Image (tube, rainbow, N blue to C red; front, side):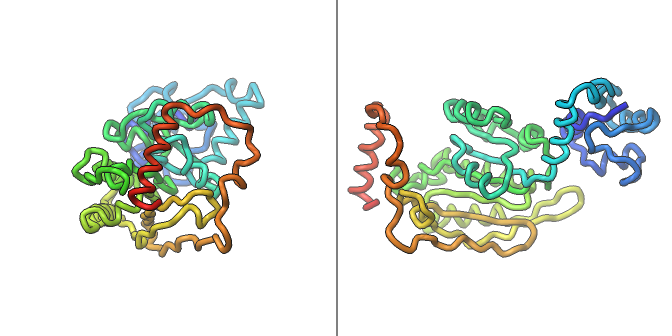
Length: 319
């Protein structure tokens, strides 16, 4: 009989068991057999012990030899399944249309799951990334187990959690209710997911106003929550937080003055060095970036309305 990696994985997550828990419950020595290689062949005796440990039937965690050997596609899928597990996987929160995700993918990471509340953004993600697991819901309604299950990950296995919680509550262009606004409190939903999934590191971005709201109280609370020790499976983990830094997109080749505060941390105790400013001459212009695109259609009502708010913001804040 052949173990089905995906079936076994889902069962473990649902029962909140680690790989080591399964080996211990089944009485199997680590290295004796590999339960986590897709299409691993097990003796009936070993399989019975695994099923007893998981309180499941054999068909719940196996696939037939016929299903594996009949087509090259099956073999390709198994090979792909093995290689993907070696990738640097990311949990993306507040994903929007995937802009931040694209940057991390260009740096060599793989998005394992995306969480986004806006249906229109999710539709955009589905069109552009048909194979990406997408959770279309408010983060308050989603458990960390839900996220890990969709990503096919266990706690400690994600490389990063990334995301930009809603910024309107701290923006200089808004009413700046901060933590008194329900949207502002979503910062701590981000913290919850980091603490419960235990990635190697995390990157959070937000408007620079987060740093000075209520004389820095929101940022201080955020860092304090992210720094608290976390107990998991008898071990204690904690995140080393780099000094938050305000970075401007125009300094990295983007034709836009867009300042954002970046908060980054890792549980390896490593120091984090922010990328150096790359702009040495005049900034990239919009025309040099997109001037070769076809002539656009007339702007929509929404575009006109948003452009007017930008004009008002420039008059009030100077950017």
